[in-house]
Image (cartoon, rainbow, N blue to C red; front, side):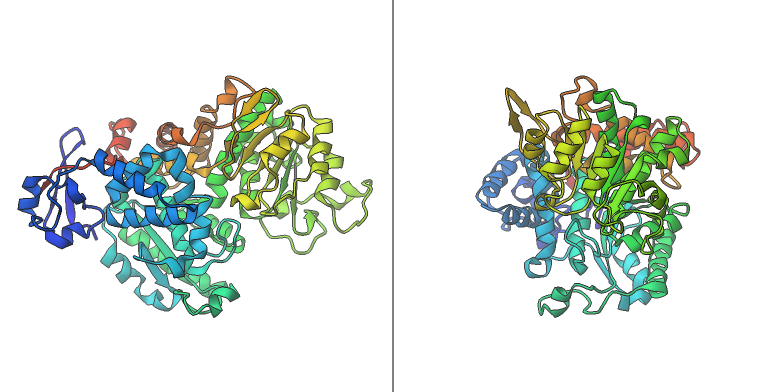
Length: 569
């Protein structure tokens, strides 16, 4: 619960902060601590004399010191740990440091490094952050929320840790993903970190390593499933709705059996987003639209193969389907432009293990009867590329090297500028590297990746690789929806976000330029996305703020920047 009050003037600008905390209690509050930047007056008023060195520093001086300390750490994981410790000590200083070195630090606190931090959560835990609600404490959910969440909380990032990045079931370690997402909402979206919350729903784990690990801090039990699981989720959502009726609920890294069902069940009742399906899909679609502009082939004429038909892969397909329909195709015709593959190969209607959300993408068995196959019961990625001659190839499989030389060269044989997007995270799970793709296509491929890759030199060109990072989408979507207190997050609002993001693509000006801006431009992109989302919500009648409030002002009111404000008792 917040122990301070933010005071604003009539224009919505923060003038000062009021708090009753003093001494070590004030220094121990990450949200309020200024370290040696407390002024002489503040040191006297808040009983800090003797607890701090004599020198009074500026925030900029502190950033210089912290950056020097950061650079002393050799591995990305140790840098991640250092930055998280800094966050737990002084949030303002952390966000100022990270914002000034965003391109460098974002991959350290977020993907791909956060994957390693998740795996070592129980071993590296220093200070718990966020809320942990175990299945055995399900009768205490309301009490936990009442005790620890401020009534001003406007965003919750929640996970059950079942499908973390490309590393699978990580149990309670999933809280690190929630914490990282919350950081991105502030770093890239400008949302006030004082009103964000991370929550881990601990429903057990099916990871045998964690269950047998004596250091594992989660509930040592196999995952709850079926009606028991659904009832637990219902208890949680009901408690959130009752306490925080205007809050925005972000679901992250839920298993594919649960993710879509949860979103479908609750999306009309609360303002909610599934990060894996919707924000990942939104950025991928923005890349596709920019690629269409670069190749001058309309979206409705693209032949799209997606390798990996789980939550992310189908979420991307769904977003593209929606865009195709908006551009004039019937829904049936749009589905005919897709070929999705999963563990059982190409999705075919005769397969018995198709999940409900995969079935619309299953091809008719009769379509492949003329294909020359070594195994009629398994249609491989190479088979599909040879027969379909796709213009776009997207990877969400977490199978490193799945886009091999034969597959890429077969695709490039039929398409002048193939759009190839190996999106799997972390980096070691990418389906192909940009360097290989460009060499195998003689520099003709248009590329976006899920993980960060260095520039590639091909011939006399130095090519920046666009990272299809969902930080270009979810922070701005959340900022816009929260600013207008949207009743729900509609497809129209997501489309507005995609359109705004795609218009930021450098490829619209030059087809050889990257499909997305640099990560350092994410805050600027997020503001444009937020305005588009807020405007769409208002037009659809989903906004719950008065019509006379300008959207820029509404966004400004919930925005935050890392700076020290004067404190008063």
